[in-house]
Image (tube, rainbow, N blue to C red; front, side, top):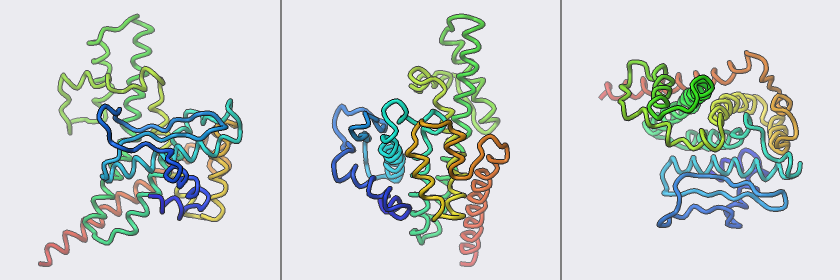
Length: 284
């Protein structure tokens, strides 16, 4: 994972190394320690801290890559001062998701076993679909919740459960049976209380990062300094102005197609890997 950041940019790699070398990251498992993962932004005079629980699994590697992306973003944006260093909500997950895809790409290139490659690829595709579609479902639920509260006043738990199920059914269709107990699952999402509509940032960031990665692949030399400049601005400019630095017009509907095309390519690659594996098995 550290190698992925270094291969992308020596400057980014050196910043990531600080979290390991200076112990800016708490990844140890301890009794009573809170679960989850979080990058804590402080003040410009100090550095961010990464808090997580590392068990050595692949998902933990991706979690570290994700949180260190936040750390890189927060470290670079300190230069604009305490009032503007915090990235605006639509861009808050950009560097973290980009760090994940850098790490994933490196794992795919180094892995020689096609079965493992297929497993990695399918896992990534599922993560992308989850990040985009499920986070949209959560945002839809929040909209339904707030509109209902405006019309109906204080809502009972059962009413909130109904709104949650209503938002989730279109995504699952006939493929998954949503039980009555699933109606309570909105309760485990802290963002709904502490940062309303934050889930939108995950969907936006995933699609944005797919587009950014396409730009990176086209011209790495031109892209990398612009990307780091983009992170260093924090919230100093509007999201559309920040994204324009790397040649993306997020106000253009065709912008989203660039990201979706990469997802389509990943699905096609997975299908090709599966066909090759099936042919190999049938050959025996």
